[in-house]
Image 1 (cartoon, rainbow, N blue to C red):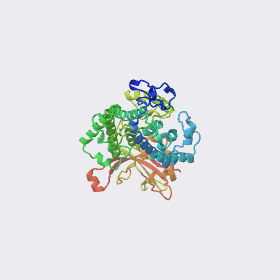
Image 2: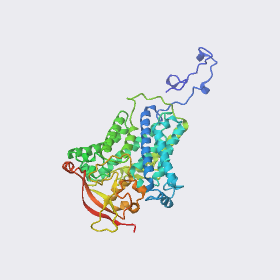
Image 3: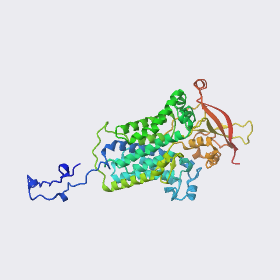
Image 4: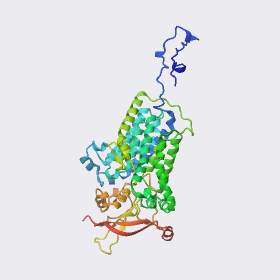
Length: 510
């Protein structure tokens, strides 16, 4: 790109004086050093309008994920981490210092303040989805994204067990980079757009490696014989996926290995190959969306993949101006910070003892990801029951509590909830794997059932004791499996369960 007044080959010519028709040959021509047309050149390696489509779709979609995350927090926090919750924030911040879990709620906590932050985050995320950040000046747009990130970081860092999922850190990592992507006032910063691909690469490649290094069924291509049935929260199509022919299950696993271990490398190649790789990842994630409920993990992976899409076949990119100097400096420093913090996650990818879903610092800036390194062959479910009888005998009538997402009633078809995150239902799936997963919260949960705590009951689909709390509560573990085609036609049941064993003996507040 030529500077104003620059001739061929980069030679600086004299500028014509408008007072003279042939001013270039006139001795009255002034030197160009103070000319208003003398500007710093646009630098394509730092910012480029070619990335406008990827940034636009990524930012609007990420704001939609933020909206779901804040709504999930606002609607569930009182029973989980509220002042009278199972794991109160107030008790947590008394024993964990600010430097270990930086959060607004380290300074002060109340349910009213938490609700204000969660609903404010949801409102701001909704405004950004509608395009509010692009209608604001650059600095104000960055503040909007920074507020979203800081509010959600404050929630995650005091959420304890309820927020111990990999997609929480993934949302924070992607959200941190979104702060510095700019808006429609400037061309997107190239290096930060490529760092989004680096995040996507670690998500996919890390998940692929953890599978190859983990359960042997990933290597012999048989994991999907079991996974659709035993996954944490099956969806409405999971029963049908489970009953696909076994050769097709093997093809699914093989295709998964290709998409997670080979395709991510193509994200760093020129267009249109990078867009093709992103589309393959998107298709795979949508297949997972159809087959189960994984909160916003799949949707957020799709959002990251959109950042690699080239929109030029759809519309010519607009000619956006170069960012101001202060912004370039800030973006460059952020890129250096992220690259420096990437050392440990990159080393983790190469390690034989690869760890899944690991955060290396309290701001969740760069993390390690992975899922389902091992697959459960048999599904167990913790079924919680209560009774109004004053004493427990062989004739005691027990009535079950029903949950929104986890299997219970065998005739109830699994529902679709993702990207909404049913945190209690997920933790109950882990609880069925081992009682150790519930040592910090399950006792408190049972206590709240015994008093009909309204906040806790809002997390359930059905409370069998609407008028008065139960006298006793117990929990048993049942073995669940999907019914066959014939069983479904005959009984109308999606599940078959058998062989109950005691998990929690009849318990009462008395």
